[in-house]
Image (cartoon, rainbow over all chains, first blue to last red):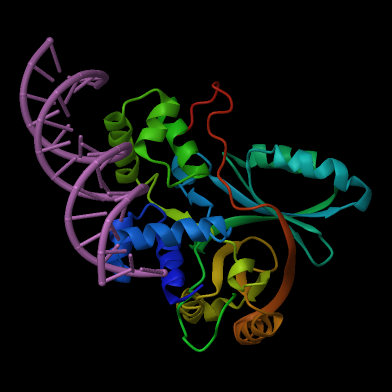
Length: 153
Length: 153
DNA sequence: AGTGAAATGAATCTGTA
DNA sequence: TACAGATTCATTTCACT
C-alpha cells in the first residue's frame, strides 16, 4: 500500500459511492489507474465492504443501544448463530473484561429492545447502555496524516 | 417510505456501490425510477452516508477498542472538538450509565492506544475493552422482514 | 505501473403516451 | 407517472510509454 492506495481508501471511507472520475480528480491519477488499484485492493481483501448508513431515526428506529453480555463459555455454540440472525443487531464484538460480548442494536421502541434483552439473558448476564446521541457516527481512520510511518506491506 | 424504498435502502446497506442497474434488477423497477427514489431519499436525509469499511488489520491497525469515558459535565465544551479531531476515533456515542461516552477507536499497536487513553483521562475516568474479534461487523437493519408494520412516514 | 484514445456499458434527459 | 429512445457520462479494454 503506497500513498495513492491510502488516498483512494480514504476517499472511499468518506464516500463509497464516489465515481472513478471523482477519485481520479482528487488523486491526480487517470480513471483506469484508479480502477486497477481498487480492484487490486479488493483482491487483497483490503477493500470490499461498502455500506450505506441510513438515518435510523427517520426510518422509525428511534432506540439504539449497546448491550454488554457476559456470555457463558458453554453457550458460545448456540450464541453465534442466534445473534447472526437477529436482524436488529448492527454490530457484535468479542471484547476483554467482565462482559465478553458488546452488541450494538437498533429498535423502533424500548419495548422491542427490552424483549431482545430478555431473550439475550438465556446466554448470560447483560448490562445495557441506551444511546442519547452520536457526536461521531461511524467513520474511517485517517490514513495519510503523517508521512513518517509505513503502514502495512 | 414504501416497500420499494425499504428494499433500495436494504440493498445499499449491504453494498453501497451497487449500480442503479443492479438495484433495478433486484427491485423490478427501471433505472430512472431507482435513481429518482434514491435522490428523494437523499433529500429527505434518509440516505446520504455511504462508507467503505476497509480491513483495518490489513492496513496495520491491529488494535481496536471501546473506551468508556466518564466525562465531567464542565469539560463537555472542550471534549467535543478534541474527540472530533482524533483521527483514530471510529465512532463516539453519548450513552446512559456511569460512563457517559462510549468511544470506538483503532490503533496500530497497544502503545498508541495507551497514549490516547492517557490523553483522554484529562476529561474523566476511563474504562477500556479491547476487541478480540468481530463476529458481526457493522451492518444495516433488516427493513422488509415483516409486512405488518408501517415504519416512518 | 500509468496514460490516452477508443469501445462498451451505464445513467440521465427528453419525448411520448 | 411510467416508459423508450437518445444523449451524456462513466468504466473498461487495449495499444503504447
